[in-house]
Amino acid sequence: MTRVLVTGGAGYVGCVLVPKLLEAGHEVVVYDLMLFGSGGLPAHPRLTVIAGDIRDAARFAQALRGAHSVIHMACLSNDPSFELDPALSRSINYDCFEPLVAACRDAGVRRFIYASTSSVYGVSEAPEVTEEFPLVPLTDYNKYKGLCEPILLRYQSPTFTTVIIRPATVCGYSPRMRFDLTVNILTNLAVRKRSITVFGGTQKRPNIHVEDLAELYVQLLELPDRLVSGEIFNAAYQNYTIAELAQMVRGVVERELPETAPIEITTSPSNDLRSYHVSSKKIAERLGYVPRRSVEEAIRDLCGAFRAGKLPNSLEDDRYVNVRVVKKVGLR
Image 1 (cartoon, one colour):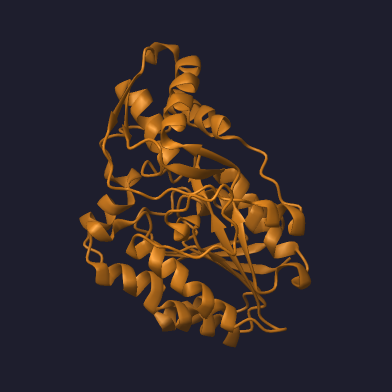
Image 2 (image 1 turned 180 degrees about the horizontal axis):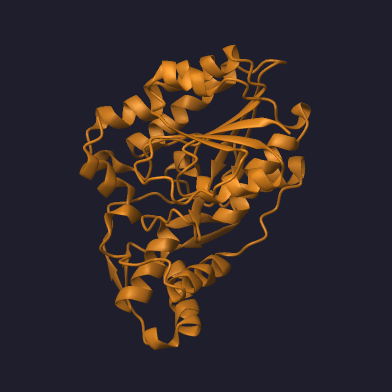
């Protein structure tokens, strides 16, 4: 059993990841601002939940005590800087990153897993975007995620193993649900409005089920250093255009929830130009990691959650959209 600290562990991915870490026998510390509360986390004797800001160096150092590994997911996500003060995004996603990494190394942490993003690639017409491709960030979120990567790699050493994951757009049900991610947005519109608006449509996007991504992080804790030290891995499964995703959502939702049919699809212009087809060959060949759940399964899971009444007021409630909550609480 090892002690694992998860920053942002009460978030969308964290609330799926933490139960898997506990099931694997780890002791888990969740360090999170708790903007959305901790209701998505289980009660467990091996789980400690700490409300804290990753910019608070003293509090973070205290939380690190005894940690063997850190999974760093805390960030201001979903490209929010067009609506928020850009300085806020920089302070959370970049300025505090190196002090946080140094604190982990100095505390005796043995492995540091950094959740970057595949959106660092920005726009690429290449049929398969690999980890060696240049980064072309189009937003502050992408830029700061990418800038943190070389900082972390400088800390790689025989006693401090670092690994970077560039996840695709995550989809599927989580106890701390987000409806500001592509597949989830489209499914929410189909179920609640019986109408999907596609912005653009030709943009290519990689996708990964939240359960598969959570399982990857658990696996990364267990692999030998020689396989992951100083490595960067894309983590994606299925690549589709936005228009293809909309058609898929319509088909699955109409089958799972027949009362929603017919679901209309309309198209509008978009200023979101991100488009890239991510290759996950490296992670499959080096680590043997292949996701098991399709986008269709993510949509079915969401339909099941709607059917079970787990997602009330999904269009109106701010808690499902990160930017809305950050603005509402006045985070500085």
